[in-house]
Image (cartoon, rainbow, N blue to C red):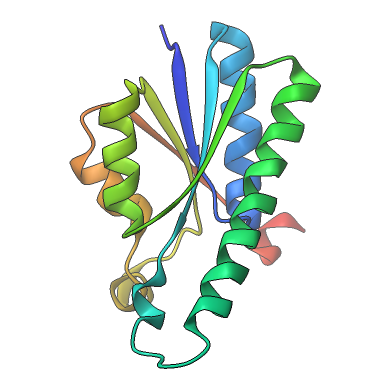
Length: 147
């Protein structure tokens, strides 16, 4: 059913939860996991000096985030590919889906709603609304819910 599963990651607890689900699905369907981290440097483009340092730090963070996916996939015996790219997150995710023939996207979400979601925006929401493939969203529980 699924041959290629994309798990965009930002290294957050919500992404970690999504990784667990993606790896489980990849085991079930003998699929390849694609780990993607998007460095959105647009917020730092107006910084005159030091922007390269910020971008380098974000790229290093991205490498750590995709390595978390590699560790989980290798432990489960699942094939994995990693990519750290620059751009607008939801656009790069959609571009990756199209260019790599991804069958399923598994993404974490923080479960924000109302004004908080509106003000912060949601990469996951944009991907859900515009992707041509199924998108499985995994909600990260709040600390109060975990008790």
